[in-house]
Image (cartoon, rainbow over the protein chains, first blue to last red):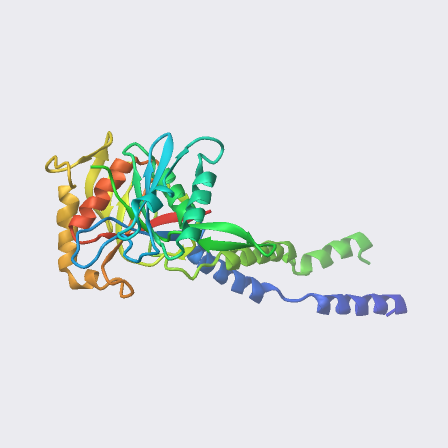
Length: 176
Length: 164
């Protein structure tokens, strides 16, 4: 055999050794992929806790503490009417929290709504309950958006954005 | 003596054909990585109905199993059981009760009497209902379902939403 031929053979053998046998890895992938496809979540579901007013002994949705208020949000097609209630605070104090925010603009008034709720929360930090009363014709998505805006807000603190809980307990009610 | 081109052709015939699976491996690896990232450890007992579009929310509370009430565009269901049809903005019920949906009320009372359903949520003091509803429903429809559930002894809800 000529030297050139031998060299060719040797290189060929070397090249053959270099090929990694990928078939077992492929087998593994073929098993793994269907399994992961079955357990993959292509949608991410979370939940929002809510309740409806219920008549119960020794339990009330109204704030009992003298420094806490319950925010009542009436959701109309064109505006939010926000009032506050408390067992102990005087009427004059509660009236300061009362406001009406028009539902218009890009955010449908949600930014102003959040800002007002934040101001109320900062005034009475122990408050946690929001009573939401939407009108009959309001869409469910809009109700969820208001619940989101009333439950927490992002605020700037020391140069960073932090989550600030507002009124995480949402009670949903309808107009009688 | 065999001609060189014929010898080469015979050699090609004798050698085994090797399939190049490197590109296939690349695709598989990308799919695997994508699926590993989307792999979810959360409770996926929830089955979304085809004719339902959940509302979007910023909530990050994880989904936990509880009694499922589903209100699609055309139907009201408890768990996998159809309770009544929803047509032209009204529930097709046995009786036109303005306060509650009678069929749903009866169904929930039955569930309440079953011990295994009463114990579904051991974290909560009271039984909880997972409520899945289409985002386009009007509030009066949503509230009628909620009110009926509350009357049957389920005043606490978890609204199922899609994470933003």
